[in-house]
Structure formats: structure tokens, C-alpha cells
Length: 75
Image (cartoon, rainbow, N blue to C red; front, side):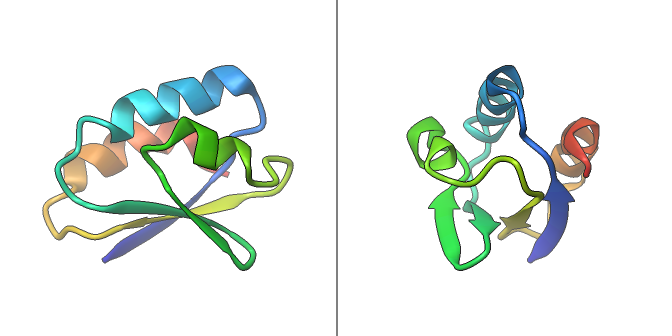
């Protein structure tokens, strides 16, 4: 499992993030405090407090390409 911290304060960034994660075959979760949602679910993401940094948990060892794409969201 790999973990990074990101920021998705604007709706357009959420849309871009979901577009990237939807193409992945492995499980990706997004955490905000005690809440956990599927990172491929735009509705799930909008249910979180987006004013604070979020933690992305990627359940794959072969995710270097995804980590590279997600760097633009780094908090």
C-alpha cells in the first residue's frame, strides 16, 4: 500500500482526480479524518470536508505512474 496527502479544494480538481483514478484497476481509497470513501466516486469525494488535506491510499505495488499523475494534487 502507498499513501500520499493531497488537496482537492476546487470542484474542477475533484473532477480531474476522479478521471485519473477511474482508469486504475486496483483499489484506491480517500480518507478525511474518520471518513473513508472510494477515490473513484465523485459523490463520495464531495461528501468529505475538502477544505482540509486528504489522504490517498493506493492498494497496489505497481502504481508509480499513478503517483506521478497525482503529484499535481499534492498538499
